[in-house]
Length: 292
Length: 239
Image (cartoon, chains in turn yellow, purple):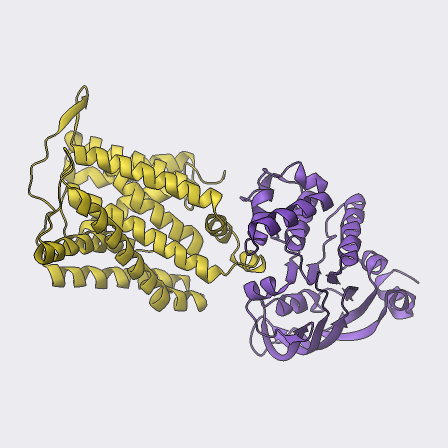
């Protein structure tokens, strides 16, 4: 499950990295904002209409969850577009790559501080219900929510694959990652492709945030704490490769999960980086990157 | 096809503001003709093409397409208005298949038009039709050049700008490129051709000019340019 949620964030990050040409360190905060946006909407509809999260069978949520998901994706996509328009696009026009990276650090800090100021530093929960884990394989116990996370991630990744391979936008995104000027010569506006890339990355980040919030907790450092595993997954999979980011996420997620019982939770991030270093020594461009 | 001429009027353009490479170029490619842009290395031929398609900043002057002022238009808008461009290098997307290249170029058309345009281009480039699902990165240099040309022709441009399409190609492939250009001209496409290989250019062009230090010097028909002693001495190896 950890790999699946990292995957959603990593895919958005690698899309931004390959298509817009810079490492967006504010991507972690998009995950956080997605979780808080959904949580706040839940409070609002609960206060106005008396709706709760609902419940579908063994899942801890029901129909309203779909509305929260859609709304959180839209709001976070809008935030990503706002950052692109107000901050990253002007800097990209001036051609200062280091300026873009530093600006993304600044945006990350500003968003994190705003979230902590607005919602406080304490963690929040979508539900206080205790989820019962059931054994699905010998020695493997999962909750229904965790299975849902994996299933939803699979569906979203299949949808992204279809977008990238069967639509004009997807072809344009792949083309732009290679040669934005030639894309313009072909009659497609690169700035429009950049906007869609930001929106899709933001929407996927919101899903990751909501799913983590649903299965764990919502807190101001939710996305920031994921940033290193996200970058590890992106680099491990090969920068620019969506499929590589997914494989990288699975490797990072499994490595971190296995590390907890072996060496303790406080060192699990280090395990992901040890795996990353080991892979890069053998294949410097990542698992799905071009042959060096 | 709606044939259109291309007029460049006193164009000043360059990669850095205040450092012009093209210095007051004026030329006219008439509707449905092949116009060759000749000149030594560094004379600004490629920069002129890039300025026309919006990839290089224009400081002053005008560009007209069939009477419409298109100066300063963004590149993608020019492409949709019928200005096709084939750069000399990096002219294909290596990770996209041949089919995907063509689909992207006609994305603005409706589905029946897209199918018709792609089918007609595959008739013009049968070698590509047999490899349509191959990524461009798996093609040979000559096949990539054909793909770049096909990608530019598939939306039925009114004007086609080509930057050294024969560079690095074997003679048989050069002949194939020239054949496609003649057939495109027969369909009414106006072609502006930048070529280092003056013989190749004059073999297919109707008219042309020689660009020196960003300014046109000699202008005339292909026969006039081929017969010009200075052109012959400088570019055709005549003694």
